[in-house]
Image 1 (spheres, rainbow, N blue to C red):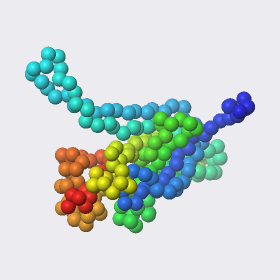
Image 2 (tube, one colour):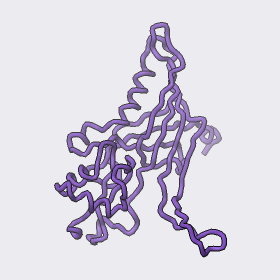
Image 3 (cartoon, rainbow, N blue to C red):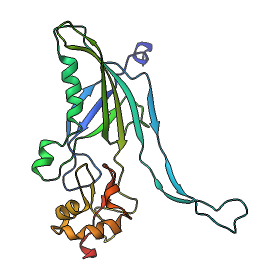
Length: 234
């Protein structure tokens, strides 16, 4: 590759996908790509592990902690939308487009499985920040305006959270009873509504809670992947 090829600017992009139908952890078809006008100057990537340390009166210093799970990656960035044309409203339109991806898609509403689009951030070969996620928040701060009141610049703070994947050992093609379907818990869902979509019996919410170690159904975070009872659990 020539030196000019090495120096070629690679643009970052947000890819939006249809949420999967019938649950699962793989996105549907690509809905839209939004190239970022300016590459981010900074990316904040967070990955945490969850541990619980129980008190022990017999331990000389501290009890050995218990690993309880791996938390999803989160990615935060600041995106600048700029428009030098005072007559243009493209900044407002682009912010509105980002806000739309925090709401359920029309197709998911028609399927009675409401979910916003899933998103992936891509920037060249930068793999650690490229994962299937959902849009947690968009905060737009308008900093420049035309004489007509059109926004000419918006500084958008965007937060993404990893969707996750099916637990290891679950093989959807094996036919084994160990395989279970899953679904993504979205804002507005309840365990009763998830159970009703899965089996037609809202009362099955207790089995879903037990299967996913849910102690308080009112505290389930949107974006969590829930395993669903299968035929062998009837």
